[in-house]
Length: 435
Picture 1 (cartoon, rainbow, N blue to C red):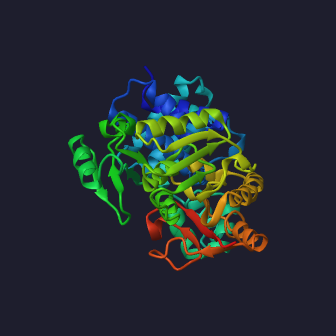
Picture 2 (cartoon, helix red, strand yellow):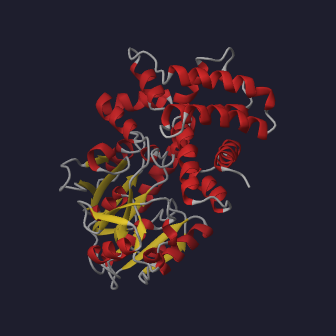
Picture 3 (tube, rainbow, N blue to C red):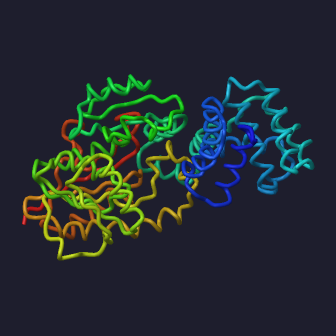
């Protein structure tokens, strides 16, 4: 049976080969293992740690290599990154174990030719500890310290300033808080907190009504009875705030144009109540099924999940009181949850920008007079956020900006950040149709 380090190694190699999402890759390996809770936690910490600290690890490894790090066989580099991460960031792992187990891992995986190099480099890192470049080059220093592509650091420094950029990068490392939304159609916050505690899960209220922060000890959230019973769904505070900003009233008709897996639609359905209606769309049928299953688990009968292209107008749908456009984006605001995102190239980020404005423009067609249109992303990028909204206002004179979250900020265009709002990095803009 593979041990914890072998499983982490296998998962990291698979992720590098397939370029899939980290959470999906790791879940596949852990669900098929016989590891106990403690070992699964170790695998998770090592797996995500190596991904989120990759640039930092490579910088430190490079200090003791005679040739460029890219010349190393990918599997060898993975073992060295794992060893370096244990030495530099896992205090409970003895240095001797980090080095020796890395050497053993190379032998187990037919990489004996590299065991001498792995041993020598890791012993130097063990002796010298974490090394960082000079701070005179701010972008380079932040890039290596917080393991984020330099081009992205430079972009954020230019758009958000040094203080917010470093604070955001700092908050992106380590375990993220988990937030849930109480299903107000079935229970209330106090009752759910009590039920969760009976299952060994600590939960506490937040500054947002019906949003709870929970702590896990490696428990699979889908195995919790309260989850199976449909008493809550997992949703970051930022997403909950974006739905709150729409000011959905009892009986409203709501369109969620890019809905899957359906979290915002579920929250919107609770605001709209049994007399309201939420139409939740996705372009792919299999993702529409995810929405349907979630709505069924939560017993939300006022949701209709449909297949539809958010950028293509369908006159048969009629008008809505509220329209939500949570558009596809580069995802830079959620690098704390999906660290692989921060290694995207500039070209990858620009490609996604082409999708956003057509969705917002199409969403506006469904908004009735006096209705509200919300645009949101889980990224930090002026090109995907403010610039899209400014273009929309210039080309749609029958819409005006509305303050989305006046209880939090007076800003018309709202950028949420973890160090300020306890959320993912997130953008929200709200428009009212005046025609």
